[in-house]
Image 1 (spheres, rainbow, N blue to C red):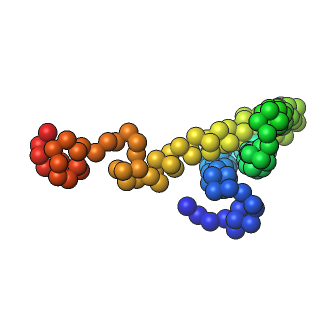
Image 2: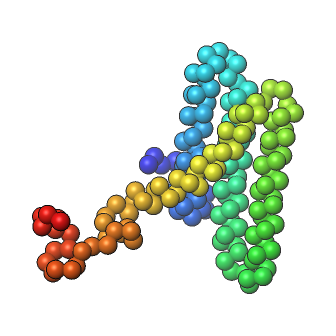
Image 3: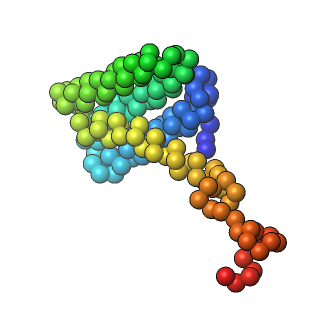
Length: 160
């Protein structure tokens, strides 16, 4: 995975940094897709919307990481309230970005929506990265080695 210097300078957890890399990698894909689709300068409103939505996704990652690190040290009832308020704030920011994209004529709502979805794609990509990084058979809880007859539990030469 490529290293971005500015991401390593931000004080984020490893998962948040990985999510940030996914969000940053999706922005050029969105812009390239719009350039291919429009084949003229008409791609600019979509690109502006995508940049705006992706910036929101990056901000939501930072907010989520800081929220988790702060909520861990709180008592459970207070932490629950704090998490709910932070979730509402992230939802409100998403609504604000989408409303701005809908009202401003030179920003595409579809581009903003695609940029907003980069956050969700980054969240889902964490599971894929965990499976990929686990790699070894012993790391996957779904794969249980055979130990019924002794010998090497991973030896498939017995033919069953």
